[in-house]
Length: 278
Image 1 (cartoon, rainbow, N blue to C red):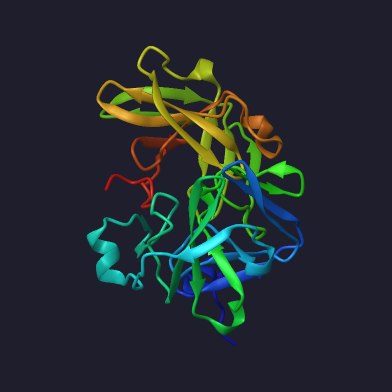
Image 2 (tube, rainbow, N blue to C red; image 1 turned 180 degrees about the vertical axis):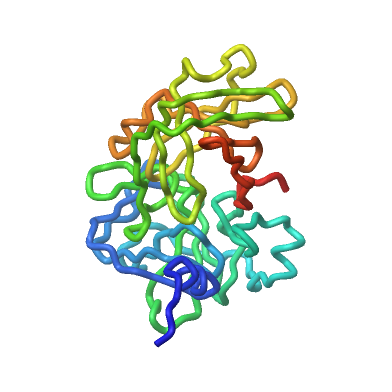
């Protein structure tokens, strides 16, 4: 009997078209009008996509449908040309890559309502017949039951795990210590590297300045960023996290990919992820 590392099994399917039904009621507004209300939605991952989108039965979409700009599936060469980010040794499509970049065959469509327009995609797959994949970011708002979605649909096979620790964590860049703490909170979110969330009083506030950058995470909420004089957006804070991530409120985390992190005297190798310098 052969053995296999679970992460290798999951990453091995990254190049496949994947879907999973959800039991949640999914709704969305476009141009101020409620155009989606469905209990038959699918979570959908096109090949190389690392976060899911929604595929909705066309019968559950109350918007005017029309043709979109035809597209051809993007191959490895096309991904390399657009500078797609990497996860380890694999080129991937993360949320920074527009919805209109597709890696599976299908037909582009447009949705119109309330003077607004959103992109859709009818995949050429018999198991997805009658469904439209939709551009999450083009809609005013999405809801799971009565709760708003942030950033993208939540993956039922993805979770964050938050644990308190007394490990000694030091953050450096070019020989300068940016933070040092024995009170980190460790956040695990596979397949990403562990993130070390440090109390603000253990961080060199005199070296960091607020940035204008803001991002959203479906599992943690909306993040604000901090920059060094010569290094933009090297750290972030969740001032008002989602309830699942309440323990990291106002703590500072640094990109393992852009600074040097030393844990209990051992320097951690910088990982290759979508947040690595490109």
